[in-house]
Length: 336
Ligand code: NAP
Ligand code: GDD
Image (cartoon, rainbow, N blue to C red):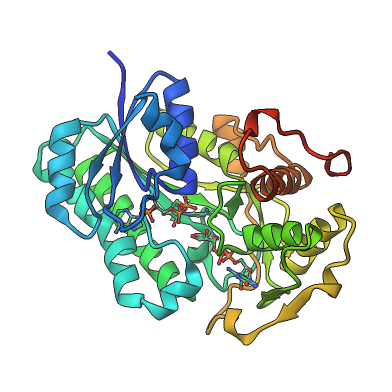
């Protein structure tokens, strides 16, 4: 019988890639979708249209809705990707961030236990943000010193997952994923913000872009590669915690330079520094060492830093230039 997967956060960047990959592997895929005033299913519309995904209304702040969906779907695996995932915003709404990011894992794990669904596997979308101010490179055993409300909340989610694994013998695993991006990245994260602005500047639609700290360094991979790792983690025979990263890092400045350069522009001519985009506390450098997942599960990223930038630029170009007939769209020669 087909395995049944339930994804919280299915409308997000990662949820959409994960759903596609699970469907390719023969899973039946279900998702929890929250009610929003405008429709946010853009990333999974094709899957909803062809019936390969079914969603249920629910909210991670509402344990009753979690229980209702668990009872209805009876999943073999729950992938908990739902989160208020913006680090800077977590300083503005710390209470809400903790409710969703820290308490949802507790709510889901405890619901699985009380519903006698302890055989259901649980994946926790943990984050390199839990390493906070610990110096790079970071591995599974690096001291976790989060410096944001989001990082603190993710650390609770990480530990509660370990506690249910050790205490109740549940198959509960953490994927400690470093930053991963794609054309589907939310527009307020720095990579997408830079790519979109650079393309719009090239097309004469925008004059400049305001950014914050250009010195922070991140280990940026491609979301599709990382969701492949997540499936490997959950199909492994043992529940464990895994760092997923590329092992290469770049500063925000370098990312911007590469993007503008790709479009034949000079980043310095268009970037304005604004205090609005600095955080009260910053994670200065994230660089993951994913030796464990590479050695044990054989996972390696396929898409390079350059490949990621190219994918994001071409997609943004298409979004900004194509209105009707997407099927006939081709990248202009200087983008290839
Ligand atoms: P994302 O694009 O921001 O997606 C977040 C998802 O969570 C969306 O589907 C969102 O729904 C949903 N959500 C938010 N609040 C919810 C609530 N109260 N109830 C139900 N659903 C809710 O994030 P992502 O980049 O795909 O990341 C997926 C997960 O991995 C997150 O937990 C994130 O913290 C974690 N993570 C991400 C990265 C990264 O670099 N991308 C790295 C490490 C860890 P709406 O569409 O309705 O907003
Ligand atoms: N968002 C944003 N906007 N960030 C900026 C800007 C700006 O205008 N200017 C500079 N930055 C810097 C931030 O200060 C940070 O150091 C870096 O760019 C990356 O910021 P984000 O893209 O917002 O990502 P993040 O690293 O804070 O968080 C992402 O990665 C985490 C994993 O390490 C998110 O996806 C989290 O959900 C995820 O857990």
